[in-house]
Image (spheres, rainbow, N blue to C red):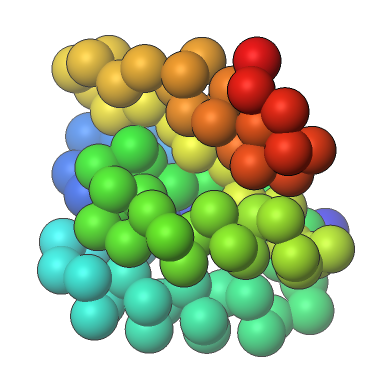
Length: 102
């Protein structure tokens, strides 16, 4: 089983490529949805890594997929600027999943 990266910048893609993870660089919402659908349909992909900026292009869809789809796992990673508040995002997902505000 493989990892696959959906990134909004080439630096993240190059870093992941050095670690042996394939991926693509995309920017627009329709590209994100199309490439995510393709990656999710591949049987060899177990984990999809997505930069925070891409997740912010369609947060409601990504959140729904994270909660409902057993496979592949979608993991948010910060971009090279590290400005994302990933902890708050995780709290929001858990709160939505269990129905209790953390």
